Amino acid sequence: MALKTFKAMLVKDTGDNRYTRQIVDKSVEELPPGDVLVNVRYSSLNYKDALSAIGNKGVTKKYPHTPGIDAAGIVAESSVPEFSPGDEVIVTSYDLGMNTSGGFGQYIRVPAGWVVPLPGGLTLRESMIYGTAGFTAALSVFRLKESGITPDRGDVLVSGATGGVGSIAVSILSQIGYSVTAVNGISDKTAYLRKIGAKSVISIEAATDQTGRPLLKERWAGSIDAVGGDILVTTIKSTAHNGTVTCCGNIASPEMPLNVYPFILRGVRLIGIGSQNCPMPVRRKIWEKIAGEWKIVRPDPLTSEISLDELDHQIEMMLQRKRKGRTLVRMTE
Image 1 (cartoon, rainbow, N blue to C red):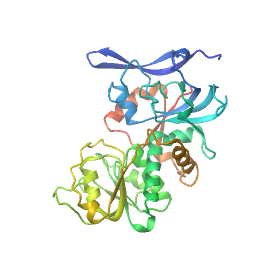
Image 2: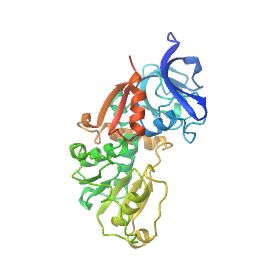
Image 3: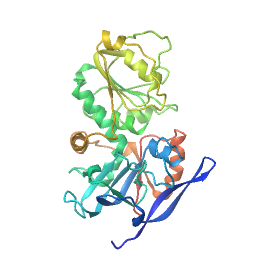
């Protein structure tokens, strides 16, 4: 190929548990083996990317490394018949950006089994407004609907509602007819949450029970929980008979001190959402939903767009929990 070098964020281990981040020139030859070489046009910033960028060994084991668990771009080279140069594609999850050079570089090389053809109805830019966070939110909505939680069943609670997963979940649910109650963040984002579709907004304190009772008053037909910890426990105890709670995060805590009563007395279902290794047939189905009936009509309130050069600052903002919605990373200069 004509272009031998490209721009990428590179995180280096400088010793003494210290890590640096800078934008560097990398060579295509440095990329790992794979079936498909993709010219990345857009990426997005996720919390997992921020952890990789500060040397979290639970996410990335070896450095130097280029994070970025999301990428959307154009196939530059392919060794498999499923993809051809010029195809528009999405790559999210699997090992991208964790231990495989990721979407914060202008090129990635990955196995064909990680690549999703861009569905009709989405542009490359729009696909990264969703990215892994939006895919996780849509997969959560899919599981709620699959378990029989329809809009007429009652209110659906979304925790972590100002974050990437929560914001997309609020928007999709409200757009397809659900009454959504959103849990506000550490700082007051009520106006933002109402703008993206929340019918009601409650505080973290109101979403967290301190009584220790085994069951609470039935409040929710279902819930999409993105934080874990006490809010998840309280939500499960407050879910109505035959309701469903999905769980996809642990930013509050990975612990879940809970008894069995919501499950054996109310028939509450708890469904884990693991988007990283979601089977490809389901993955394609969810992306088709995102491109079709679940496509957010007005995504602008959800999204801020930055260049690769602005990424370092936004990583710091995310680590300090000062970001809301989705941060789109424009990879072209």
